[in-house]
Image (cartoon, rainbow, N blue to C red):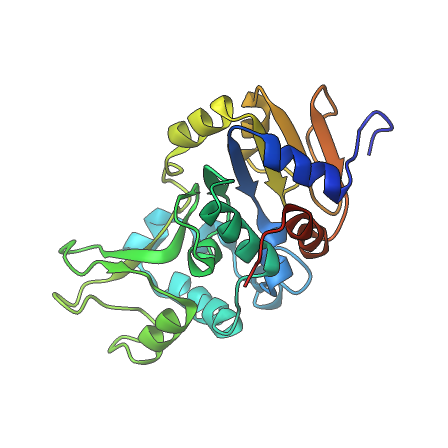
Amino acid sequence: MSQLARSLGSGECAELIRSTGSLVVLTGAGLSTAAGIPDFRGPNGLYVTRKYNPDLVFSIDHFRRDPLLFYQFTQDFMSLSKDIRPTFTHRALSSFEECGLIDGIITQNIDALHHLAGSRRVIELHGSYWSATCTSCQRGDVSGATFAWWDNAIQNSMRAPIVCCPVCGGVIKPDVVFFGEAVKDFEEAAAMVSRCDLLLVLGSSLAVYPAAVLPKMASGTVIVVNQGEVMLPPGRGRYFIDQDLNEFFQEVAEELGVEVP
């Protein structure tokens, strides 16, 4: 990291959160890996261990022709993730929202852990497995689908591992953004960031677009908490904290006097 990059302690971060008029949070893969979900592209990720081709797994055209490959990937993903629970940081963000400290969360993650933690205003740029739609009748919609729900649906499907609509028998597609589909609610996310006084970027290297441009839209203070390199140059009102997310936010929650379940 550049010598010009500035850092903050947990107490200073807590004070900025306490005193800000509008706080928005942007989260990335580091929050999911902290929960125990392997990075898809990491050494233990599903793309490597099972040699899935992401260009095919998440291709909307390939899914429409034959959803089997995607559901084979999803079956592996759910078997690894069904017992995963939100981290302390997920729960802390939900508690901060309950206290009126957070205006909203924008996430790049598809695991729905913010929903499971109890956060209410969440923009999922890449969608998630939390909801799903029948590709045939649009009537067999699913909402609040946990990892365990997907695992059970896959195991008990008449076309396992492909999950089918209970209304018409068509293919259910989780509301994950595939290659060839537009990201979700980006304009709303950009508006939230541009008007906030404080943006927290958690667990993201800011290497994936279009989410990577959001911090550059912020007119207020930006605090990045991420272990490793971040693709955001130092600048006025930008702070970079290279520290474990859960440890850091345990300290921040204590400083704020917020109880986190």
